[in-house]
Structures are given as structure tokens and as C-alpha cells.
Image 1 (cartoon, rainbow, N blue to C red):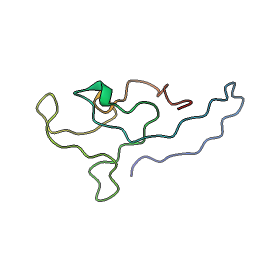
Image 2 (tube, one colour):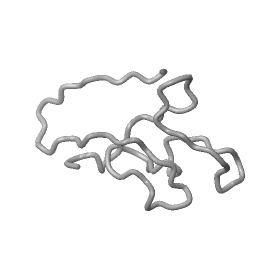
Image 3 (cartoon, rainbow, N blue to C red):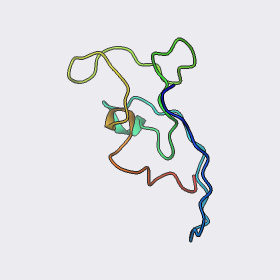
Image 4 (cartoon, rainbow, N blue to C red):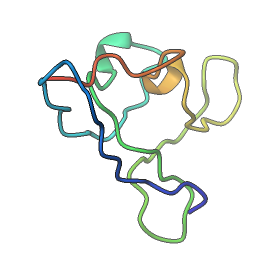
Length: 86
């Protein structure tokens, strides 16, 4: 995998709300109510093994579905501000 997770120690934090457990993102281009809410895992797709996302068929523009970090998988622009306390 090309992304590496890092464990960080945050100091001088003012809040005490924990980060929720990340869930697998879901394809939700056609129905935003299907989107995974809260913290989301990284997308592992099209790997030899270890996929956490399976998609098939075409997207709304007629192209083969290809999950990414965008609204089609429930990600909005910027930071995941909905990750706390879930």
C-alpha cells in the first residue's frame, strides 16, 4: 500500500472527545443515505487481497465504478470533521 498510517501524540489539546472507530466507506453516488457516516477507513480496492470495498457496474456518467476519496464514496472536501464521539 502506498499510504502509511502514523500514530501521533497530540499535546495541549483542549477537547476530550475521542475519535470514533472507522468504518468501511460505501458507494453512495446514487443515494446519499447509503453513505458511511463518521470516521471512514482508507479505501482498499483492486488489490490482490485485502480489499475492503467491492464495486461493480457503471457510475452515473456511464464509466466503470472506481472508488475514490470523493462524494461517490461519502467523502466531502477537507477534513473529516464528523469523526469525533461516534
